[in-house]
Length: 457
Image (cartoon, rainbow, N blue to C red):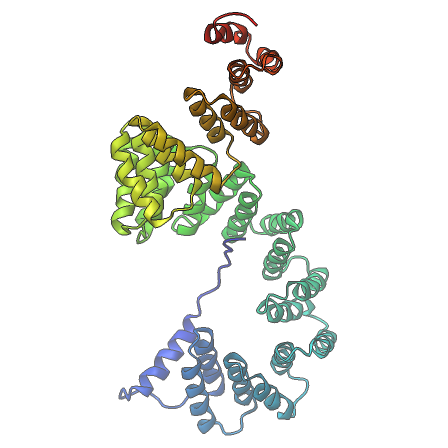
């Protein structure tokens, strides 16, 4: 999945302890220099979670001066070594501590063994830790799963989460991680089932609604995604990530006005990098409000002058308004940034056709096909241009290529055009066959053929 949302409880008490510790280090008068072991544990863990391993190590050394050889603080030293990549040092400390049945110590050992690629030993220790707990098996399995999830060992994490679920099928934290594993194992049916189970217990679990919406979106079930994001948005109205995902879902459903509402709401929540302006511009473009679209594409361009999508967006809007000469400037600018986009060469060709430079336009269309041969519309356009030049054999070749590429049979009147091309190429049998197919699709095909070719076959 592209995004996953899990909310955690703020740790205000930890933060207050850290503030007092930092005030002491700054020599603020009136601040106590004594911290008990639990407070020092909290400080060390706080810095570790923040990625501040140097500060964490400093707090630990300070703690060991206050509480020399304290068992808990020695374990924290091993934890710091694990965080900084000194796994062998960490494991050495854990092996020499002397206490074998401490829960945190064993979890750290599992982590160290995993990092040392001693997986069989790690799993054996996992079994001993689980067997030692008779009441909180689900929480133990979750703690073990976190260790394997940190290394994206989804298979191992999944096994322990399933065991935990068997013990307690209503452990919400465990169910979130289990659903996450199902997603990564591409078992979306079970992931959806798991999130729905969470929601039967807690209908206001906004993160579950969000993650459910993400699965539906990934699987192109946009209406179901929208329903899920609607709930998430109501529960957490200030969550910008839900807002933007809901906007994209409306867009996929071609609900462009609703998408605009959400994109504008997202813009108010965040410091825009220009991407939202692009999305707004595209909504206006789909609504055929080309002048409004250009305004927002230009805003994106103001943020980043080499914004390829913004340049192409402006060019398309100008083409739609028959501003062919003006569009060329933006297309050429875009192509200086990215020269291998087949679509850009098509837009370039369309602009050139608009100013009657059909020879150069044909070369641009051919360049587009070189980049991406699977373009039925472009192949048919090339064939039409060869027809205008009375290059009938070449026209037939490109009509045939277009027909082969037309997987969904969307090209209108292609058999009629082929019949005409065959007629002028003096292949009357092939013309007759193509005209018969054309008449199956268009009752007026014979009449149009006669008008173009000047009589009946």
